[in-house]
Length: 221
Figure (tube, rainbow, N blue to C red):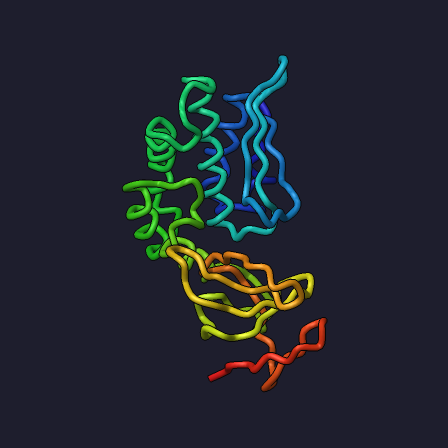
């Protein structure tokens, strides 16, 4: 039986690595460290035509977010073992398994107190992604290692502010619509909805010029 603890401890708290290593062995799961993906933190693929379970987790998550995402995906694996594809992906069965799989890590106090408290609250009704729970996501972000001090979040800037995202596209923040913020891409006038914790670059200066030549007044307090 292979011991993946040493490799896993590079990405998650050391005390958690032996548990996850045992899960990988017990389920014969193909566990992969993935490149960064903007649309998801991790994923699970069920066996197909004799293949094995597959789980991939983004490599650039902080250690606690990496572990939480890993538990999330193993809950999918366990749910598939029990019910195949006969239940909803994030239904009651998955929620039960997620809570159950999280317990060893809570008992070992692997998480810092602020994350542990947020997880306990989140576990009352876990959602499709830990990013959905703003309280947990905000606390997890405290432990990110980033050298980019220019980054801020959508919820931290004023309505009307001009910002850019990685890749250079420029937007103006508008009003909040339920759980997300309406934003207008200046080059196309298309409307996009941004997660409150989406990381953006607030552009400096009094005015910003869009690609079509229009000038937009910047709001910075």
